[in-house]
Image (cartoon, rainbow, N blue to C red):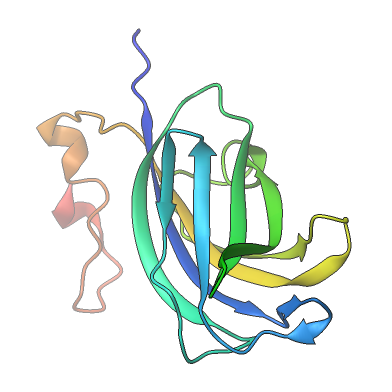
Length: 158
């Protein structure tokens, strides 16, 4: 049986307590979600959120089956270019396998670390792993129906 790649629905929600050079960030933060160096997405720059930026941007990315980590990095646009504020490597095992069913939306928060390994804020995001579509028979398709009229008798839906 051939394994299809999974789609990862990733929403970068917000960040908290971001600092740059030990001072709270004033503006121009953005986030980068990387599966590998060639598979990444960036949010728009939040020019008003300061040290508590909000993006609420959703990305759908292909997730290779051998992938072990996803990297999230928060950066700041300055007059001299881009500066990294902090990053985190999120284990894929947090949202694949175990007790987590596919297509289940999960909300996660992770501490960001700067280049020196010092705590530097928190990033909030949601993730949903979309599994390969499975064909089901017409007989099995009716099993998941739930009556909306309050009756407890489910046999009429089978």
